[in-house]
Length: 386
Image (cartoon, rainbow, N blue to C red; front, side):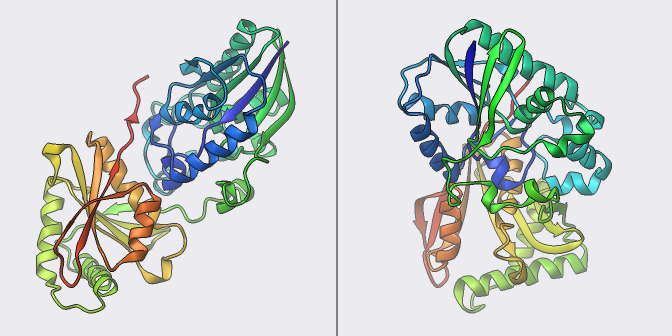
């Protein structure tokens, strides 16, 4: 018999940005790194003979929790990957809910009937994750193994082991980031001792403690993004209202604010890329704007965020991360290796947000009223080829 600790990866950018990450391959977040530290302490005194991971970066990084106290080679197996999401990869959950509500509902509540272009069939996912676990167990009969995989892949395996049909998937729990499932494998038989245990995480480290979708089955709060037409008078007026409010919040007044300059700049960005300026909506309500300069920094493989804004009544709802996710996904798909932005030295709230999401100060320049801090963040690998 083989004992297997099956572990979900730590929080990654897709989780934080509320973007779809199957084979889309983002970095582990700051919270995720703290989850990995907690996981390392949990696994510290467990004798392990082997360590496996999917070949995606978020699982490989999570596997460092095991390697901290165990001198083992990390063996990569692509069969342990997350479900391939096809044309949904990298998109926001809010976008697919709006554009394809039927398939969105199928994915959440009846995945055997989920079908999108390039997407992996539910039965295929169940077979490959089951076969991977059985094969690994056979290689290590009588030993104890740690395997790092992904949320939907692990849930698909649990459905198979519990004998739960696709339409009853709601009866099988979701697993928090770095949750641990303990399996005992004998030949083709897999017994579950416990599933999706996150007891090594307090509320301060749990991803799920900050979200409700996994408990309620509702994804309220996922934003969708619509490219703006700044030749349209109403949309241009909305953009400038947002910019003026942002300027006032950063500087305390509108001194130095010249609307025409910022509108011309945004229109130029849209000429370079039709997705460069987008309105974020909760259902059909505009909640903010994200704008990027597709040309600035291109030769250095850097992306530039020109404007990120949330309307006051929509702040404090974890929406800013989704706007940032829109920009970083856009630049990742362009092949950029990092993303940069300026933030006023006086805007300590914004600085704290960007630092929390992985930006670091790399420079400083003269600004209006206060110096501008140049901040930069590395970008993930994006979508891997099959």
